Each structure stands twice: as C-alpha cells, then as structure tokens.
Image (cartoon, rainbow, N blue to C red; front, side, top):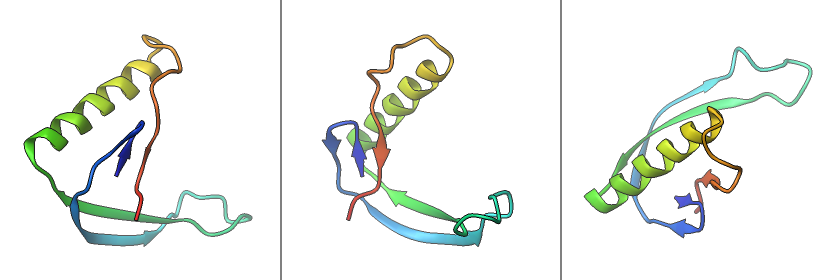
Length: 73
C-alpha cells in the first residue's frame, strides 16, 4: 500500500469481487474488489491518519496537499 509518499507492506486476502452495477455501462466495465488486510499497529495508525486527512479534505477543512492512497504490487 502507498499512503501519500509512505509505502507500507501488508498481507491481504481478496474476499469479494463483483461487477459494479452502478458504473456507466457505455464505458469499460468496472469491478469492485474487497480486501482484508493484516496490519500491525503502526500501519493501522498510518491508515487511520490518512483516512482522517482525506475526510477533512473532502469537507473543506484542509487544502489539497493530502495525498493519494493506492495499492502497489
């Protein structure tokens, strides 16, 4: 996982894969994937902080400096 510029390694299990029924059918089909992650307390804290920053940004409480979350392999 990459949280902003910090990369963390976690074990994960894919628990669900489904077609996105809400997606626009005129574009490439979209799938939804749900993962279960096994994380240590430091990684869990980093994820919680990232989520809080994103929520604050979405509510207009922060500028656009909060970064992105992405899965990396």
